[in-house]
Length: 301
Ligand code: G3P
Image: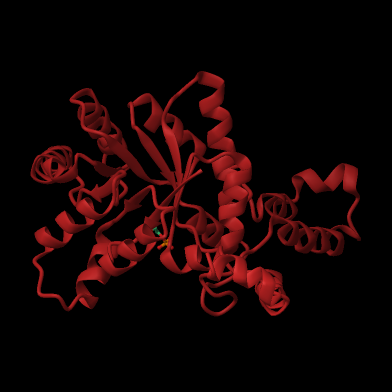
């Protein structure tokens, strides 16, 4: 699995690159805002982006800001033409659906993706929250699709009545098994006085409990990746999955298990992936046990 770092902070990108495990970078307007707010090197945003591109010999996603077709296409072309010459590694990020209001067109994003990929501009289709959106992205020729794992987990927890911040912090992992346990308990307490055969399928509250913790059959962010993987395999799409909006090391491991081609990971999560208590303990005991004769072989040659 390729590892991308999900940041626009140069310091983090350079550090991850120095470890020799970095395959690419993803940015978005929020990550650029954070990086610019923190940067103190006096560089213009254009210089900053160019330096990111030069630092990594792998795809770097730059997102469009517009939401109407003409703006998306124009911005994508400007970004690509201005920056791709730097290191030939620009990928344009386009949301699958740019609609924000009831009457907005739901197909603007996908139409723009089709136009750009037909012109040979590589596209990372972003803000993908469902398998059907991922199917559309692949049909439009997107090179990459970015399902947002953490935000799907947030959405499922919100549907269960949990509030981020109050009931759980952003970086926690909420296993599907726990959703099942809580739902089963609720079901048991709700159905004890009911005639299951006659009543249960007519009882809206109980039927809602079956949908609880379930986003159109998707049970977690990782489950979304699994579903997209199945769909792409069924039809031989070569769109690569970038598992995005990752919050924990456990999500990274599960994405690798289900075969996501790429995970774009926050810098602090990449760091956590390397630590284990027993590795540290082993290092201490091996270091303590080195005998002088063994050391001499290296030191005196
Ligand atoms: O890759 C998308 C990512 O930057 C969004 O992450 O944690 O804000 O959902 P998050």
